[in-house]
Length: 515
Ligand code: ZN
Ligand code: CU
Image (tube, rainbow, N blue to C red):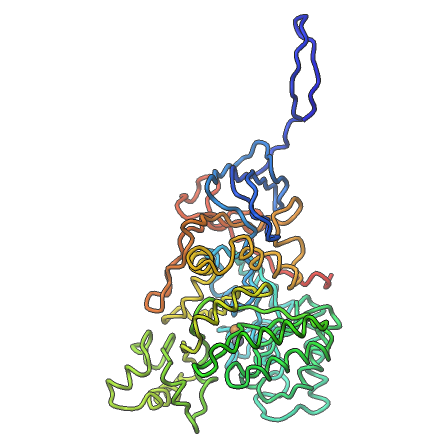
């Protein structure tokens, strides 16, 4: 503002004249702005024109005004660990993610990715949930774009997927020619904009690989500027050696590492995440580049067939299994194997066998209570810990509540109630940290020029409501979500009203260096 004097009516008047502020399409008024950097909030307005943030602080007139007093405006959350590859097409409204304040999804985790694929061939044993009509990442991206998802997505290329395409479920090392084929598939996906290479080394067929195979494939991601994300080979008794393997893969292949859903599985291993984090800190101090993610729950979830071997069913694991989605016995959904076993007068492993050997038994998704609450908090205190939901999108049963509740649960339970970490820091870990890590361009911060992926929430009420018994409940306190400048989520505002939600403005993103 430039003070100057004007002569009017013969008298001198000192006046303050502000250059006429540029109008914007949409303005958030009087919000506490958390810019994503971890700095404390500042009060002000934020203006959006088209798909970009065009003003922060003082904002001119707007076509749509959203009053946000008492609310916090933050960059939209990046869910770094999802299995939403198929959901982008099957459920493009993605209500379960939008309602949490998420605006970008990283897909292709745990070694399972939608691309590459063989068009028309079903996704055997993967987590995609639909038959691909594409062969490569470009084809998958086109299918996603034509479905019109509500959120942005960026993809990893998965080891299990690539290995199965080249050599089926063979439990042996690849031949030189097979390894070349796998390398070519990884390199091609990277060239088409994948942000990195993922493994799921407990799963079939990834578990048949040795470290050298993973290093060879990770090198292709390294050459393209991507990262390596790892569901490590063992999260229980051999957690520490599995962490060492991931560290060595990063070192030998020369790329950053993301440890997925960091945990110490099984009661006798609880507390080990402290040692595991210390090992990662030491590696980072010595020049490694390792970050992590976690989901804020004490149960995991995944395809049950992957966790059990029929010839030696693990009774300890059977004792903590609950059925999420069970096409063979729908009435088992939401129930613990131990309770079903007691009713039938058999052992829990017998219930597991009964389900796995039934028709469609391989499509069972289970929930396993294997994690210590104190370890969840230890994880969330670590400055390099991001948040990933790891939800599996089978909405027919009773999915793990993390699919609907992850981000509000961190902000409500762990930030507000437990004070495990501060709000600005939690938001940084959900926004700028993952955006930088996964190569998102101009996202993850509330600054002029960035894409307008934004969430308006009430820090006093934000909370998850989804439970294991009622898992499909939307969180509270998430009031407005913008994706690429369009209002995607705004409960309580009728469709057709100015600024109403419902936009499906998500984009398929390519790694920053892929251009
Ligand atoms: Zn995993
Ligand atoms: Cu996963």
